[in-house]
Length: 186
Image 1 (cartoon, rainbow, N blue to C red):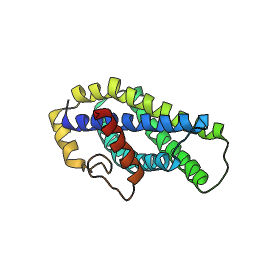
Image 2: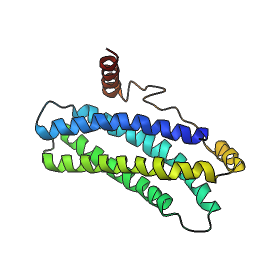
Image 3: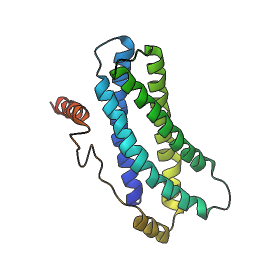
Image 4: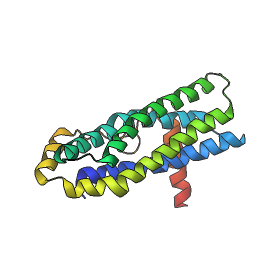
């Protein structure tokens, strides 16, 4: 696999770790158990800051280059690009919901859970589509010259959680991930 695709796959692996954290927080929230909405909110902020503003635009650039090579439509690619816009909207809406709850607005648990579960479902399906169908096609369908062009166009931004931790923005999330790693290694 080309290094740009490898980078996107690494982003997906990291995303899946975060989605497990979000799922647990949503399950706890729905059950009325102890949960941490600040943690969930930081996680969604990360999705807005990195996935929506860095990861997806890199994918869009690669997808567009591949689409330009094709003489016919590519439904999976076009679907993934539409999903990017949908995921951005869903992430923004869910962030606003969590922020409202933190500010004291009463929102029914079922509504919060539905928004969160729908976001999780869409993110999981999106990752599956890209990794199982799209990335292998990109890897084999783009030429060496295409990849050189893309490498020149893409600015690799360090992940603000996993590579260049921003403890001001993601303190709770970083602490939670450290605790998970510590418990896993024990």
